View: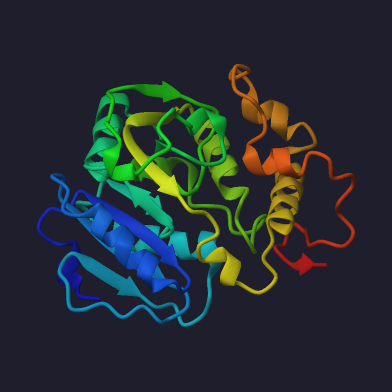
Length: 282
């Protein structure tokens, strides 16, 4: 990766954590396009197979092993923010399609709200982020609507430098394998520090979901959800759902995946567990 990647007054860096399915990463890069805001993309290549032609707009980090989503994202955040002109980082999955002007829409929402976390609307799990549009992402008409929510999906989060300075990086300890609780935890920490979490209709993504996670040994939605729940309980207590939704009772507490598992009783013994040191047992 060339040091020149982040020079010349770059304002925002899009961090894409990938693990194979390189065609999805190239597709996401095309959708990011060339925003009006000074922007570069940084791919954290956890599989080490992403070959990119020489580019001043995209850089690649190859950690040498699979860091997973949380650790890989944190590596990207640290790399981006080591350059003083960068004011915000956008964490973005590679298995997504983006609306026109996606990055500019997120950045505009942040400039207007000064929220601690900003996320787009989408077609996937959490009801506070869903809108009526369910078609092609490029056909979405951006709308200047921003609303406060309890938390957002880690599929895409704009995180300003000031938020990282205030609350730190993603928690790699309680969700070391799949990372599904990292987004909820990060938003709770941002709110506890006095910040706001905002969803904007100025940007939209379509999420195919599990585009790369499904390639990882041992992955299942159930295991990821169990790690999510146990990590949240260990860190925030048994009433973590009440804490997470405090002040946002208008939003349902479950998403599409959670509804799928609603009938599962005591699913713990055969799936993974997590201890506070980040070790997996199963």
